[in-house]
Length: 584
Ligand SMILES: Nc1nc2c(ncn2[C@@H]2O[C@H](COP(=O)(O)OP(=O)(O)OP(=O)(O)O)[C@@H](O)[C@H]2O)c(=O)[nH]1
Image (cartoon, rainbow, N blue to C red; front, side):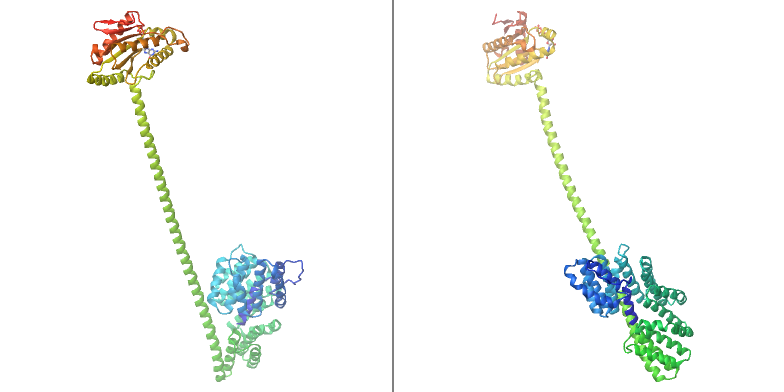
């Protein structure tokens, strides 16, 4: 245990700074100075930290957390691991500044391993290994790497530990950090029983640490060298080593370390047959520690006592010592086994948790994809509805345009584009219907037909546009005098016909005369030209021509022809072979 407690010092890194507080310094700066002081001036650190508590009331959240972290170190240094853990635990929270949180996690890992609460410790170890990266502050990387490496060494995971030792070496900003890395490296070599390599590196590492004032680490390294001498049965060298380093070990005042070294030396003396010296050393070692406790020093002392008693043939004493040694060895094995089990359990729990997270992530992904599919479906449905609407509207527009087109087409087919009255085809249709009705009801049908006089001359003289204008004016003038059921049509060119249901010859003649007069009265000056406009009219009725349209028109045409022949601008009624001119 004593060595492990010393290993706690691994947390206490970095430079030696004499603390000189000034009232102008921020609390953070003061805390940083104390932080640096921990490793080298533990007593000073322990005394001075509580003095800063009064400043916490106006401190920032980070300063308060930094203070708590140092408080935890203080408890650790005084051996109160429970209080150290209770103080550091609240800092392992997502709201804590990242470097402080990682340092707190490293601290918790170390304290829990020392308290043999391995399962929790390895959970923190896992957090440390997954969260530590190059972006953290050098102090955080150094401390976390050291704790991870040390914990892995205790689990005999030497290759994994080497990775973090390398990280520590690469990131080390100070000679002290490099010294710690060297120490851990020697621990790995000892754990792997690479004695030759250890022998090559140990002295250099020890001297390196001594140069940076890290005497404790220097001696811990040499302790491994000493163990190597015993393991490789180099007893004389062990004795020489002990004699050379005796003063150094004494100066540390770490009684457990001194006791351990004395016990190693005693072992060497036994092998060299120098039993009395071995006795003396064992007694001194025993006096330095609480022999009843289970720790590495007491285990070694009982082992050496057993070897000594056996060498002296004192089997009763040898048996008693062996029992004590064996009990401690068994305790250590149990502890190692508990550590190993907890490590695997923690790893399994973390793996299970990660799997659970992975499954949840997969579920989330699935849900996300389902949501995407649903939203795509909704989008497609909206698009389809939109498409249907567009198609529906297009169909509506097409139907409407079809209807209006047909209507327009029908209109174009039935009405004269220039004058707006029925064309010959439509006139014939309407006339047939009207004649049929009149015939059925025995109603007289009057028929008027007229043709503009010398229209060709107007066209020729004033242009086709003036001719068109004339045609429109003529239709408009005559239409004014028609009833709703009269049928007015343009039969072609400048020839027009009017059917007058219920009109006998006199009424038809009168309407023809009115129209002739109206045409003659048209003021042509609006066309830009002044000229005389007249038309010749032929009139008949069903009373004399019957109800056959062709006959009626033919008779009206004959009367009109007669009007032309008689000098134009006059109305003639058809009366058999000879047409009558009422205006003559
Ligand atoms: N501006 C115009 N001229 C047309 C239209 N339809 C036919 N005409 C013209 O009407 C003229 C008819 O001439 P004619 O058949 O010789 O008859 P007219 O000159 O009126 O002579 P009479 O009927 O004997 O008085 C031709 O010159 C045609 O080109 C039309 O829609 N617009």
